[in-house]
Amino acid sequence: MTPDAEAIAQRLSALVQIPTVTPQDAGPHSPELADIFLRFHDTLEDFYPHVCGHEVEEIGRAGLLITIPGAASDRPVVLMAHQDVVPIPEDWEAEGWEHPPFAGVIHDGWVYGRGTLDDKGALVVLLEAVESLLAEGWTPAQDLYLMMGADEESYGSCVIEGTKVLESRGIAPWLVLDEGGAVTLGAFPGLESEAAVIGVSEKGITSLRLVVESGGGHASTPPKESAPGLLARALHRIETHPHPSSMNDVSVEMFETVGPLVTGPLGRVLARAGALRPLLTRLLPRVSPEMAAMVRTTAAITMLQGSPGHNVLATSASAMINMRVAVGSSVDEAVAHIRRVIKDERVRLEIVEAYEPSPVSPSGTDERWTLLRESVAASYPDAVTLPYVMLAASDARHVARIAPATYRFAPLRMDAAQRKAVHGPNEKVEVESLGRGVAFYRALLGGI
Figure 1 (tube, helix red, strand yellow):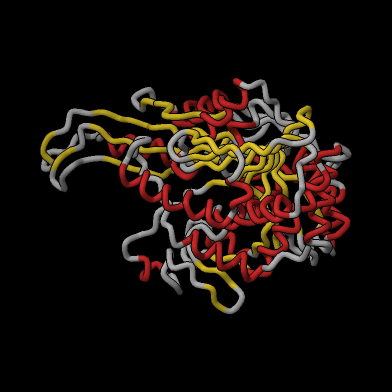
Figure 2 (cartoon, one colour; figure 1 turned 180 degrees about the vertical axis):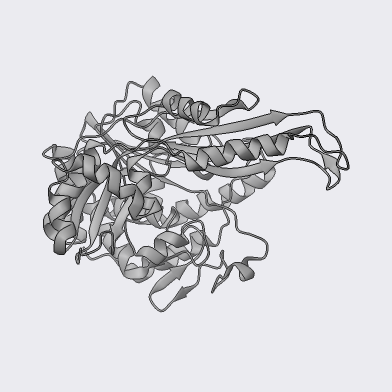
């Protein structure tokens, strides 16, 4: 079967037009949440009647868990995507959008709109593949679970609840696939082919609040040291004393796999990444922020709070630090580094939330990795498949607790501009890539 990419694009467009932005503080019975996601679920039922004709359960707030029984149940498979999207600014035109973010415009071979890449595009090609197979009378070789969270962008609990459901039923997934990597262009200087980068792990995530308190008062008589001043000094030390670098085994495997395909001196260096690990550990942080993030825990200053008035001394000043904890490290190590570099007991550290780095899933000769690689070859025959550590967070981290082979990959092509558009203006997906995404999932499901 050759997927009809144009028809798929039309269905994706319709789903983009439903603004499934999960309110940060909405409970499971929020009228706003219920109305938006009910419309989304009704549309999914209209588009994918064979899929939705199986057992559909609600998990968390508007998440869905669909169970499709297979011929066997000893190696169950969980395929994931999320329904929700990040919000857009009220003045979206000033942000640089070419088309309204929730219009789902199809123009010149592209579908534009919030969620086309993150993550409705991946959700659609997954459902299109399963629907088309079921319509042909196909039965999965193994029990198949489709898990679609509705609050991934707000670090919600849908998939946490869904994982508990699976666990309570004694289901230990043989393979889990969620969003994460993609088929990239220009991933490495000197690499002329496409690269399908598949996350075999993801960095941990920690939200750390720094708080400094002082006496306050009138701004006309400032103290020698103020709460914002002490906080600013702490933040400066965090930025000028980054976490130590360390090259993990996944990155070594990625570099050694891609090295022979990269032209010039860089290719020769990458091909010997294992032997040159100490050198690359020192050099990569100097190349780019992306390369630095691959080899160390990162600490980004995100939110600041201080005085409520321009002439009022702050009684308290605070900042949020968003840390992405490197594979091989831990939340405790990451926080301890912050304490050491601040060197000021007046700065209080509060851990708001924390997730450890995910376990590393097998690659190399493992049959699940081989299946993923063959599915990429069936849909993007010119692409090289590479393992990597996902720098962002996904719902997959919750399921990884019960599944030793959890991968992160959306079978969609993304160039550098598209990757920057995720959570930004002009998010878009290529129509032709949607057809290839369906081909990927059909190959994957056929090989299980």
